[in-house]
Image (cartoon, rainbow, N blue to C red):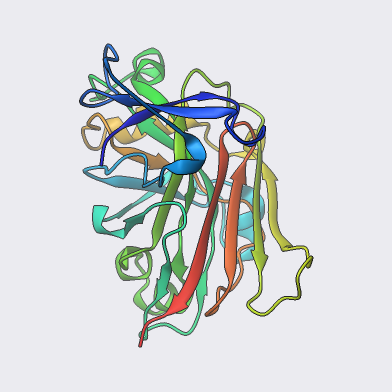
Length: 260
């Protein structure tokens, strides 16, 4: 396993994009080993394994409304464990404790060096290394039962991240989409669009969130902040193929499987 930098245009055809192996980690001055592969020939893992994933609830008014909640006056924070992280193509595993597991499509912020501690907006913006795609998988029935979010959000495989980290991106107004293709769908069937929102509709923008979180806990390089999900969250069942897309960032697809 190693870090790499994607060069070229993914999706533009065979051989259009390559991956250059990074010597060490991607933070700071990049050094390359000289090894390079076609993107189609490598397996992409989660682009980062954070020490923590800080999530923000009810950051889109339409999502708060669909669950019967008020928009919070301040960001509503909760954590997902690092053991919940999986990468592109990995399986979301449905736990037997829940009968209502749902998708939540999100833009994710990746923190870079030196991190952020009690950061103002300017420092928070400097702390943003880049952005990736996330699916904040949630056991909704357990969320209601437990009142707080730890169990409902924390199962292994409940935080797909990927496919890569995009740097230097303006995320003020990007489309956030979730599509689900049911098991057994005939060839050529189009996936059902479940969520379709835009980042401009966030209650609190990503830089505000990074600053706010940093006044609660220190954000370390590689940590991830999930920025909330738009309306349209819905169920995932055994055999579904769920894809989260964030405009200009990428798409993240995972199969859903039931645990025995």
